[in-house]
Image (cartoon, rainbow, N blue to C red; front, side, top):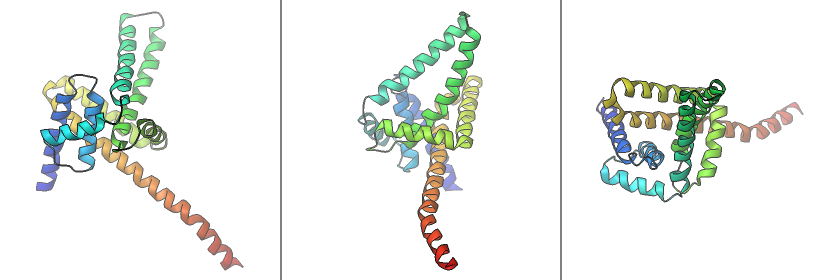
Amino acid sequence: MSGRFARFAECLLAGLLTVLFALPVVTAFAAFTTACTMLREERPIGLRTYTRCLAEVLRSGPIVLVVPPLVLLVLVADALAVASGVPGAGLLGAVTALAGAVVLPLGMRVAAGWRPGRRWPAVTRAAATDLVQDLRGSVLLLFAALIAVLVAVAIPITALLLPGMLALGAVAVDASARHRSTRHDVVEDASPRLKESACRLAG
């Protein structure tokens, strides 16, 4: 029980630090990736260890600081255009909602799938593959993000803590996808041997 409580406390602390370092906005995705990395690797979570891990993420390349804010800017601009009632607002709203429904779980998968030394394009391609092949996990991440937004709107103080819970969920879904992929690879590697053995028995 104490172990579970400690894990829960780490999630809350990770969420608080993520919000703190996401305040400049451009660092928000890097901060969420940091929370995912620390929870996945079960690193002790504190201000010093968090900033050290965040530095690792930021050294991975400028993509982490440029692409996510640009994607967010486009979605927000489209949403504002829909709200202002521009011509074709209905179609634009549907496209924006669909794009958001894809971007949210994809971004969470990318953050959870990053490892020190891995390049962001490769991580994004793998996350996009998992997004399609593991639809159940993608839907769970989407609903988790939407529920977190609703809870934060209803109880604003929870916005300081929810990112840690979302990071833990993203890490769990990513681990599940990795497990299934590894199991599939083992089966694929074993298939030729099984076929060969079957042929020998038949002969």
